[in-house]
Image (cartoon, rainbow, N blue to C red):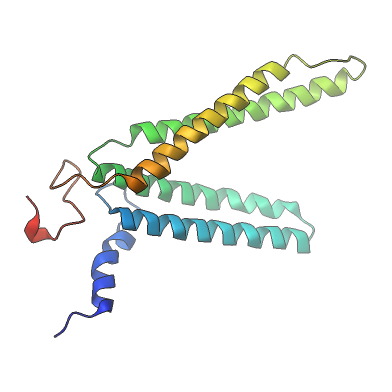
Length: 182
């Protein structure tokens, strides 16, 4: 029986779709980019749907429905990025730390902005900046720096660095057939 194009697709992409929920193992760069395109398409489509529903029903609360969707998508993103780092023979500690740090910085910035709004509304008669302006600016700049570092560590490095040849502590090389593993 001849090996068809359909067999090639099934053999090469089945491991990606069956192990997507796990942090274990390794994936190829092509699987990484396939996931990112799928992730972007699903996220954009759901966001667009929720915006349309919010506009039609005049209920901005539909945007709150994105929170669990983003949670699931973030978990999948960590799984895929983790497997790519495993494929390169590295730990996923630095990219994960950067993402968590960025979330903490953004929450702190939002808290300070809320306190600033309360201060400004109670001190409407005073001109000048509030005591929260400086820390908000510092945290905003820090958030931008951490977001850029996170983008590099979660997109550019895993998407461009080749696989570590052979077997490493995270598993066999997904780019090579089982009979060619060393």
